[in-house]
Each structure stands twice: as C-alpha cells, then as structure tokens.
Length: 203
Image (tube, rainbow, N blue to C red; front, side):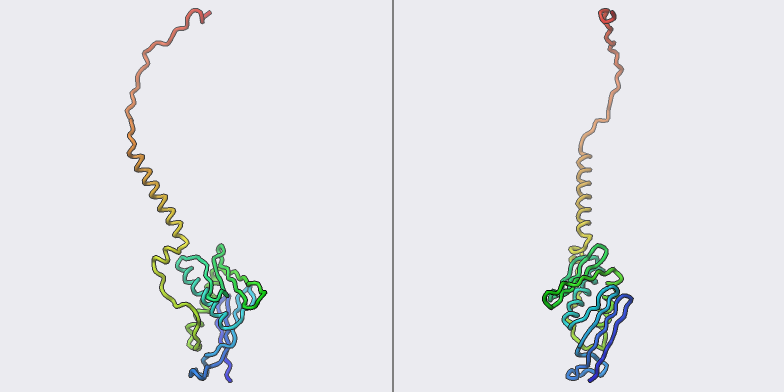
C-alpha cells in the first residue's frame, strides 16, 4: 500500500496532507485520491488536524472570506456544518473552530492580514494541485456582482451618510438663496438737540 504525503508551506502557515491513491478511480502512484489525515500549523496557534469534513469547512470560510475582504466586504462567514466561523475583529480576523465532540470549547485563532493571506495561499495551492484527485466541498467561485459589493461593502453606510449630508447641505443652501435681503442702509445725522438739564437738576 502506497502512503503519500504532501506539504504546502508559507511564511506563517504549513499545511500537510497524507493519503493514498484511489486505485478504483484509476489514480496514479503519485496521486492522493483518499485522504487519511491532514495537519495545519499556524504560527502562534495550536496544531489543527481532523477529518476531511473539518478541512472542507475550514476552506469554505477562509476562501470566501478572503475573496470578500479583497472586495471591501467585511462580514461574518459560517461554514455549512457550523464547524468554522470567521469574522472581522478590529484590524484582525478571528477564526472560531467548533469541535464535533461534545463539551469541547471552540478554539479561537486571531489572524492578521499576512497570516490570512498565507492561509488562503495554502488552500489555493491545495485545491489546484494535480497531485490530489479529491472533490473538496467548497463553494463554487462566482464573481460578485457590483450590486452585491455595494450593498455589503463596509463603506456603503458611510457613503450613504455622506450623500445624505451633501443633499441636505445643498437643499439648505438653496433655501438661503431664496430669502430676500435688504442691503440698503441710510445713515442719517441726528439733528435733534439733546435735552437740556433743567435748573432743578443742576442744583
């Protein structure tokens, strides 16, 4: 029986997969058609490993979140089986991994932009690697429509408020222009004599 192992290394991430060819599917001796194990190392985080469904769920949220993040969309994504969740966390990205075992607390991993990029790169290398004849349960990549990007963009609310303030400013300015003003002022010399104090007040 042939046991194969391949690894994808980036600066902060390392993904290693082991398996064997699926003879019934006509795989070559260098092709993994049956996945037996996988192991993911992220600097500063515990080693992640599990079954194929766990890797599928992790790839689902990471790949979709990265695509959305590049398009200016910052929102939460949850995998199909609710095993993996990722969402913006300040200037970072928080990844929550739920165990399929009972009474096990979710694992939290905080990623910066470079770590997210390295992890995404590992998954991209894996799914396009011809040495694997495995169908990954991930979402089909369909280009985002302009309407979807504008609706879900983190700047859409700011843009709406800005446009609303601009319209309000222009409307107010127009009203002020319609108000009549009188700029003709006459300066008259006061010729009326000042009252003279009576003798009673002089005393």
